[in-house]
Amino acid sequence: MAKRYSLREVVSWCLFDFANSSYSAVIASAIFPVFYVSYVVEGPTGLGDLWWGRAISISVFLVVISSPFMGYLADKKLNRRSLLASYTLICIAAVSLLSTLEKGEILKGFLLILIANTMMEGGLVFYNSFIPHIVPRDYYGRISAWGFALGYIGSALSLILALPLVSREKFEVIWILVAFFYGIFSLPCLIFMPKESIKTVSDPSQNKFFHDLFTSFLLIFKDKQTRRFLLSYFFYEDAVNTVIIFASIYASSTLGFAYKELIVLYLVVQTTAFIGSIVISKPLDQLGPKVFILGNLIAWTLVTTCSAFVSHKNHFWILASFAGLCLGAIQAASRAMYVSFIPERREGEYFGVYSMVGKSSAILGPILFGEVSFLFGSQRPAVFAVTFLFLMGLVFLLGVKPVSKKF
Image (cartoon, rainbow, N blue to C red; front, side, top):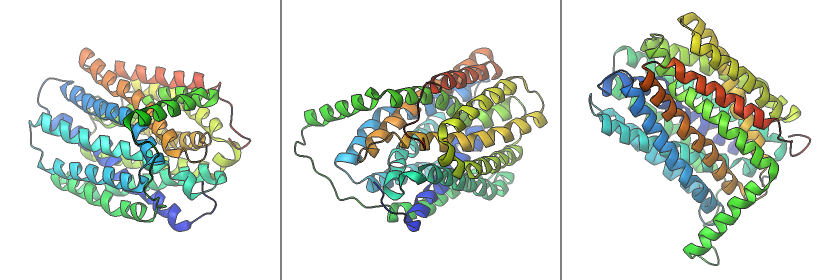
């Protein structure tokens, strides 16, 4: 566990959030989903939603089944920094290849986003597990919030850089720009994070590996408070992921937002999310993350309910801005709360399970949204399922007791 505070390590860690935010903003949220649904996919209304939902859900499923294994390996046998580098480079390569995508190449786009999203989301297991190694416990909440705050700045910057290219419909250049942005700003983290020597185990047999992994998995869920938190997280993270994945498509298809409007809208959301992360950074450690998560779940419930009925762009602008404040707070608070449950030298295992739970929930949300949208020919009925997920998360979180006075 971290015994000191290294500014270089903290800044490098936060810069990785800044780097991968270009993927989150441009590829996963604001521009590529609409490009894929409206340009690459040809067919009836809802077919694009269907293919996009499948791509995201399958990639998330792959992250779910691999994260506990990779987290365990990072703790027991391998160098987590090297694993993070491998995942990052594969994601960057897949994003670069999006520049070759042509109209009607549905399967090719599906496969590339499947690879890119699997690698990006899977790499977060190793990235998150560095927190206890670079700062003491009293700074868990702050560094989590700082990382997300810098990530929102990266999202805004990448969208600003993409805006003139959207105007000229140079989409292939945008995907290359994202890959470059991701690669350059991830380098400090891949270079300066604490380096661990390659670990060995006394019994390298496959049976021993799976036995230890299964035992570790059971021990994590045996803890009542950890189990309750993960159950709550399962529901509300599903809802958050679904909102992120389909927000731009909903704004475009249902409310008629143009590309430029979507980018400006996303910039506004990133700005308010940045404000939310900064505002809560210190109070998060002083008051504890549970307070912030509960408040945000109530707010998210109101936002999604109103979104199902909104019919004017101006109203959606207001809702999206408020959602940004909630987004910055709930993501930082969730990571800070979970890290407080983790015993020393088991960070990879715990964050492997954390990723597994969060991403397994996201298998259901996107594919459910896509299926309901396709079935009804409208996205509005699908929004109510998201509201229900937030409420379920709220109910289960009420029973979680803080680990210590700080959490």
